[in-house]
Image 1: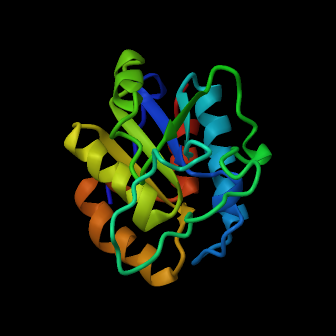
Image 2: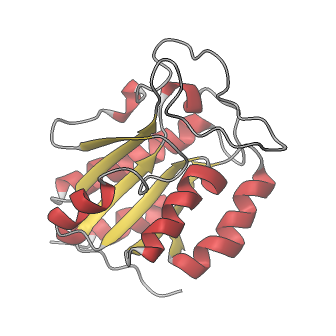
Length: 195
């Protein structure tokens, strides 16, 4: 595994769906609080070096008419009425005024949003991905980022899914083909090496 080298000026942390409804779900192989904690550590370190932080959340109109409704064998956990504040980012993230907050209407953060535009305007070429769920919102975003030509770093211990098997499949078989899989400690060490 090659050493990780990051240039904060061209790197963005993109954190997926760390919002009230998602963080309240049961996840594996780690609890949502661990994902949030590790993501905050990464956001703080990247901001301190002048990097970009992007918080992505999924939300819909109150009537839900702008959400996807395909016929599927597995029902969506988001069907029906949503509790108040379900799409708000969790307070523990400590969102800062200069962070970019993006709202999406589907799993991936690129389609139908200005994410690519905002990253390119900021000169971003590398994204560090975290969030919940590894095999859904994070993976969908990663596949699109790959197609858009971004370099990617996947922070394994700052992600979780509904099951350990789902998480493990994406981490072990999908992400190594799209970028580099590293730990929170690896990314923090790479940022600490920057003077």
